[in-house]
Length: 104
Length: 462
Image 1 (cartoon, helix red, strand yellow):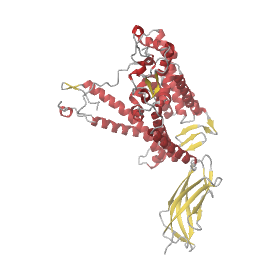
Image 2 (cartoon, rainbow over the protein chains, first blue to last red):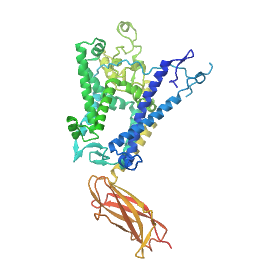
Image 3 (cartoon, rainbow over the protein chains, first blue to last red):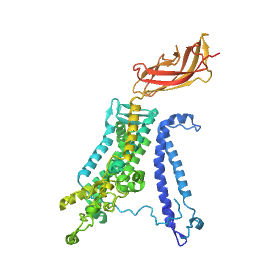
Image 4 (tube, each protein chain N blue to C red):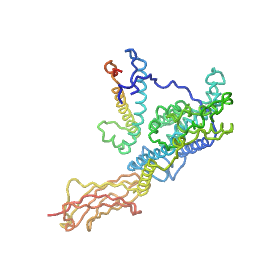
């Protein structure tokens, strides 16, 4: 995977792990931004936020612009959470058993 | 990919960034790039100021949910065209990448185009490559401070103007200009103006080639479109090697044509050495071609040591442009373009929807006729108010009847009207349980503007 934490002399390199985490955070933020932009475009081309506001069960009154903005934030945060969760789960647990490589 | 057989590698958050100081070049490709900058940015900065009839020529009016593109008005119902256009753009990108590599990156990508302008401003204030490097290394004296301040001033002004223009595509730019002047901006306008300005400033001023290296998805997969016949910018290793310069060169028996002046490296905006072969970092800006040609001319060697060529041509094999990959991309592209064109230019400005009344299948009126009731919705996607008439076909003697407050069916641009209609037929004709009829809505003034819906008609079969 290339992004596997470095294991040297049974010690985890804390600095490395931090770097990997921040890099993942950056990647997830950026990719989810692009995905959310696309989702917002496709979704609001089909559904008018003003109409959605009328039929929503939450009784707040918002205009179209706020609707678009809220939708975008909604899509971005959920895509971000999904991506972050994927990234966290994809990394192997930091135990020696999980990090064990095949004997050479 | 298994994690077992990969050795752990030392990773960095991002590569310790060494600033690239691209040297300015002149030449035929740089001329073309400059031309692209003027055309593309010219369009971007000028289009919002042009009017078309009563509205801005290009305006994506999101609050009103309509897009104006010159004489065309698009509604959310026309989303399919936007989707098709994006697919066409993707295939065009595949086609041109397979044909001549990363033309998009080198000439048309907003990232490259804005970076060009920002580098130009940097040159204007801080001088050429050597001066810039010296300035950055030197102490913060008066010279450095005012040059850096001047650069930042130019950058920030330009970035803010870019943000302003960007917002001008979504809200009428002339009103926006007044609002900016009187500092009476709405919250979202303010946000997008600064957001887009900041993005331009950051991407074109600081991130530059790092956007291409780390953020761009296209850069990651463009290699998949390449084959041995794709035009790439390449160093002719057979001709150039062994490279040498100075005394070694004068004393060597058979030196290669490359005089190792490193001009190609100095001009590269992504800071690579093209002589190492085709690299993922190369955005195909062709600056190295222009730089090398100039040097070759000066030393009296034939031009084209670095040139647009194909992998096959470099290996001495014949290259061909027409090949299965190109043909496939071309056919798909043409099919998409023609279907888009056909669909777009034959599109109706009427959008209709007809739903049968759920309460009853049919009723009998005047003891002799069957009546079905529907709810008809008409949306006017045209630019002006229109009157409509409704007809039904599919059975002999179908009669359409409706009542509205104003008498006829009339809709303003963008208006959606809903009207209950009654369709009557003689019970002798409508003698099956279910018939299929067509409801045709057309504009009174323009009978060719038509929308047809097929719907079930319940008859009397007892």
